[in-house]
Length: 184
Image (cartoon, rainbow, N blue to C red):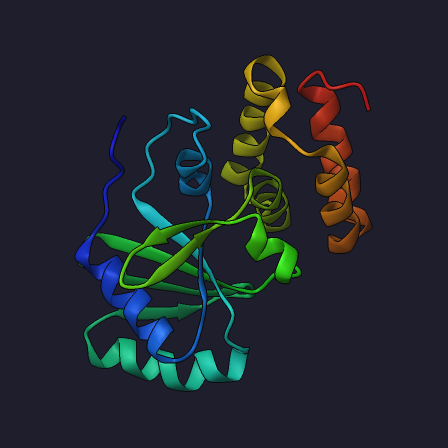
């Protein structure tokens, strides 16, 4: 199996988030990779979701990261943290992260528990982000799932999460499913 690049800076940021009582969820294309979906594109950054509220993140964590030499830039969805050649995007809980979410997660041991969301939740996270690369990833993953791994997707759960995320997300999901060849 191919190993993804993992920087010591990632461990340090995860440790800081956990010290501040956040759960850490790996998002983005890495989550698909850790779930065994063969999404082979280079990714040099780490996308994570944290469970801190924005005030805690802005006040405590930003100060800690900057004191360790990280460049922190705030965005609408959270913050980007950079040091050396590493980039980490930290999103502030964009979807419902509940008991069912965690029950469907895979757990990595990286300075304690780090959660990898289900394929369905990762698809919804990428549709919410809706950056150009996110949309390409969703279309590619849905195409792969339709051709090789259709039995690995729980459509009832996927539609439930899309509904919870809002009308725009559900409409986009339906469009991407049709593009990938699913009959919806």
